[in-house]
Image: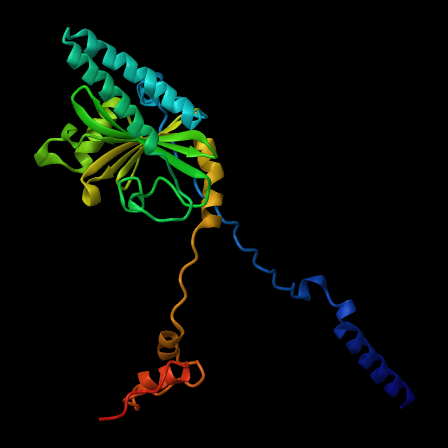
Length: 298
């Protein structure tokens, strides 16, 4: 009997040992479920920039028209004065009429005076330029300013705008004569064909074509829909990079909704009347906001 009890005790211990996790076979253990690692996000593909050939870069650089980025207002006016002297000198030589020569000299002086007097600093006071073909080319309270000049060159009626930042020229916008497009084909597709035919392929996006080089950037802009106008912009990309965060910081804040209107449209506001049940809800809201006594019920 004693031997039988010893045999049973031994069996029980053996079963307990075999069931113990520390003595279980490695193959019998279930490995903990591995945590799934999220797949790394694929980096956004860099926008492919269409290269500009040496020939087309030279054609684009002609948009400088004798000016250089970094010039002051006075230096720009001095270059303009020299250009006008050369242009009017030919006209004056073309006539022996003394009175006609005097008129030409006065015209030259008047033209230069108009350019100088067109100088505008964008210091927060909105004006006509804020709703115009150049409305997207400047911002207020960022040290930006502009000069304007009409260019009647080679029979083309166009305007040139000189943009300054901290007193230095960094961009020019040329408003083109829309007669470069046939009247029955005055659209972006035709404009794109004309521009790329002259300056080569560029990056096309919406209604704009962009050519990028190391020294400058040129944009052909379609403003036919709103202003029946076309534009060519040449700019210094380094200054643009500095201006973008500055413009964002100085951008005017959006106006807040009037407190009375907010009370009507915001169901969580205290003292908000039940518009559906109360025919004088708006009046009650006005009263709650300190706006007077609601009109009596009829």
